[in-house]
Length: 282
Image (tube, rainbow, N blue to C red):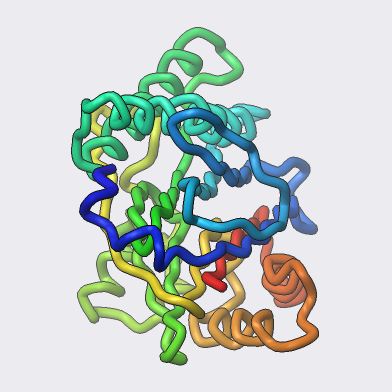
């Protein structure tokens, strides 16, 4: 939140983003949602599916969510999450401009808490929305620095400019995710574990406490970030994600690298909704 703690705006770069969501070949509806925002203390703009803009005078937020619930509840849960971000995150920015400057991690934790309470209210008010939940992965870009908040099993990846190794920044809130992080099972085994989709934490539903994972890192020209729902990685290993993202950076590549990722996931037979949101520092 405190821009004085970030590198000076003179080193600001442009962000190039692209997003795509698809209900896939099995599910009758799409419970995924994604969001792009550009904002400062005076104005806010909802971003389209792809584009490019400078980070010099505006902050950016990108998010993906994967709703859970019967009938249309999951679809509504993910939409509520992204709409609440649109309302609440710029408001937090405006508070900072007037001298009320909490840490970014605190702002993100409070944001996740408010979305959680909104989902619980709707779920408790309408029978068809009872038990609605959603995952949420959010990245907030300031000049030279990215802050993130996360809960559930959607993912945030970072592919540095000068490394071929992709790194998952978010932690899957599943027992299988913990087994993988602890080195007790391989990525191959984790992707085939029968309990891989059993969430331990999410927003809404019967979850009493919300403790999102938060973090931050500096970025540089050529870095790429990927936000995605679990449907994207159902058939794509991390090494394949890196290959596809590198291909998306190549000369003559399509304007929407997220489209490339989603198409490859569908080709590999994912059974879930699929969403990818790619942010490149150019």
